[in-house]
Image (tube, rainbow, N blue to C red; front, top):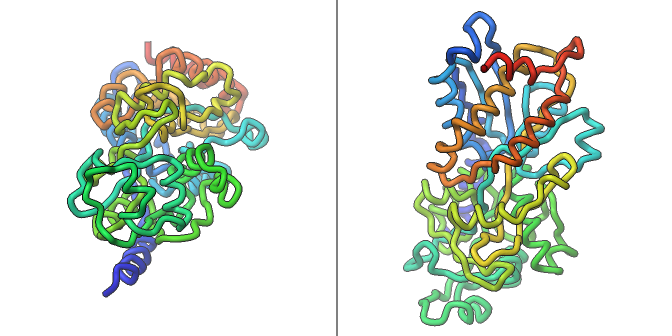
Length: 365
């Protein structure tokens, strides 16, 4: 069976995978069993590993139940807009005017990195050097062999095989794709003009899989492949990530410090609806494909108790959950940004027009 037939078969299987769902069921002073309400969210697979950890920790602390379906950012946006979930999660932020038109409040919950990963014999984590323009040309189908001059010139002394490159990309609406495409559009005019930026772009070559877990699986099973996943998936799947040349001309590897360096240069305070990009940030240590996951909730809530519980969960995640984020190689949202976010929660009202966060904050003290 050829590599391409294997990829096609794996893609079909992955696209038929069931939705990933985590149901996680009171922390003295936060809620009581008789008053707590289930909270349901859906969206980003990028944020799935840490949301699972947070939900587990919150259940242990409070007994409250937070459920999350990792269905991709595109589906998460659709579900919150249709009102079938209490919150949506997307790595592709809505433009301020779109969020306002839909009656949504948008805020970042955690930061991570999108990393290109490869399955090339003899190449380990961080050994293969790439630039953004070379990465774009691989996914445009312009560079097709691992020993192509554009790659070998960046990697003198590294044994590169005369092997076809098998690009792996997302087949579902994906915030990870949005962050990846946003980066490529900033470093490649050809990518910007021919393909552009969206949660679902028309990749001219390669094979698609569903979710970060699907891309990780396809890449691990396909010799000669390259994919892109959130960093936690690369570590968990033991995939070889690349070293990328950043805006300052330095080759850097992904990790907490390089993600944090990218976050340090973002100015959230002047970003309406927190609409800010973290890709291609300045800084010698900055990882160039850094991104945040954004939560979307309605300003006008239909269920008061659910709204209170939901905001208390995210407040807990910012504070008590910061250590868990570090453990899974995510970067917690900086304290000054958390204060901005929680100020924005003042706009979230219950059916009677009463604030929900004020009540939530009062309940936890």
